[in-house]
Image (cartoon, rainbow, N blue to C red; front, side):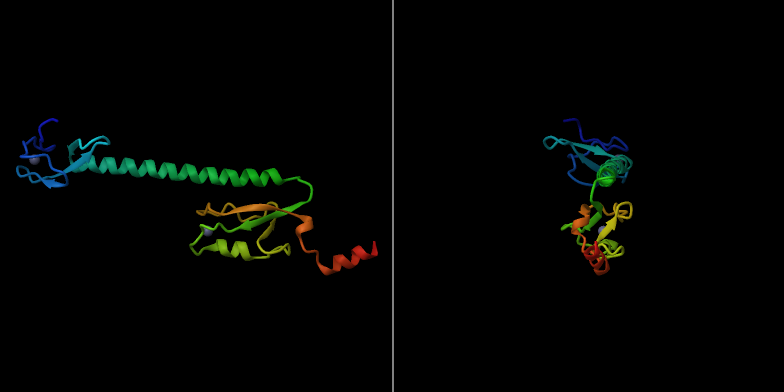
Length: 159
Ligand SMILES: [Zn+2]
Ligand SMILES: [Zn+2]
C-alpha cells in the first residue's frame, strides 16, 4: 500500500483514514474510496468523490430507464400481437400485486368505460403502458367472456 498522502497537498498522514477526514495540513476534507477487493482504500478529493457519485447515479438511472423501456416494449408487443386475433375484443387491465401506491391505476382497473366489464378496454383504448408505472399488465379478453347486454339476448332469440 502506498503512503497515505493527502490528495490535495500531498501531506503525509499519520495513518490511512477509514472515513472522511480533515487534512491537518491544508484543512481540506479527504474522502475514502474503498476498492472492491479487500480493504484497499484510496484517498480522494471531494471533487473525485462527487464524480464517482455522479457516475454511480448515472449508471443507476440508465439501468432504470432501460428496464422501463423493456416493460413498455413488452406491453406494446402484446397489444400488437392481439390485433386481428379472432374473438379478441380487448384487454383487461390487471393491477399488479406489487402495486401499492395510489395513482390512476386503481381507477383503470375498476372502470367500465366501454360496457365490456371492469377494467376491460377495446384494443387500442388500453391505458397501458401507464406513464411511470410499469408494474401492471393486461390480458386478452374474448367476446364470449363479455356479458352480453339484455337487448342483444332478445335479438339472439329472434334469430
Ligand atoms: Zn492536505
Ligand atoms: Zn400505477
